[in-house]
Length: 317
Image 1 (tube, one colour):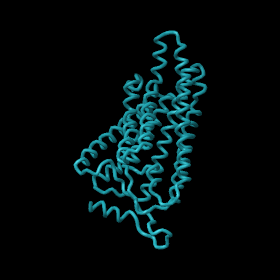
Image 2 (cartoon, rainbow, N blue to C red):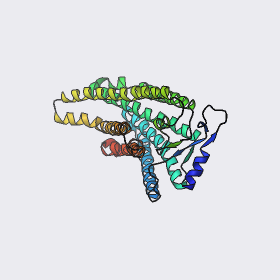
Image 3 (tube, rainbow, N blue to C red):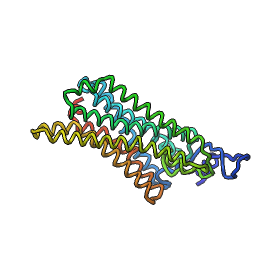
Image 4 (cartoon, helix red, strand yellow):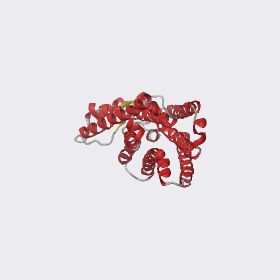
């Protein structure tokens, strides 16, 4: 309790010339984490450290396998290596700070550090969405238009799709982060989460957050719902094409090429929708934070296993 009070005293400093006495010039926030029970902290530290190391190692092995094996120099594995890079980057944005806070028993995070987490976590979540729709388009072309696959999915187009995805993600995160800079915060600077999530930050300010919430909803609709709709449309076309294949072996072979991607899509969007529903429901903030572990930690750690265990070429590499 003493360390928490000291951290809280360092998180804000009053400004005299403000209309409201409760408004402050924020120098930091408090990340409450998943639990305040001291006996649980060592368990959480060991668990998240293990998952972080497995996530980094597994995804790094995928990247190295794609680079080193010439048989994997195809658009599908090129997109997969970029997905692995994004997963490493996203977990590295959130988990290490949580581990440091547990180890030092200090829940404080600076204002700059919090905005940095908001920016990069938004970039990589958006990039995950866009990469999944790009990979769905790749499978759609491979199965529905196999004769034109090499022509359509040229190295130039693949590179442009990745660059466009990064550009959209960076611009969206930059806009969201710049809008947070205009907000005024009060003395309630506790974030019931283990990292600075944009949706949680927007619940703290004293000033009006209507424009921020509108931008967040628009971004969620355009960069979340639209890619999901595109993925669903792609798989409807893929399934209809597979059903027209006369042989059972041909159907299995065609479906096996997109089975791993479908598993990753189901895991990512399933956990994301679960977190959204838990936020909409009247659940305690701590339970929503626990639910968010599914898409922030569990999904990145599962991707290497899904693609390696279900893919003969990847296992060979």
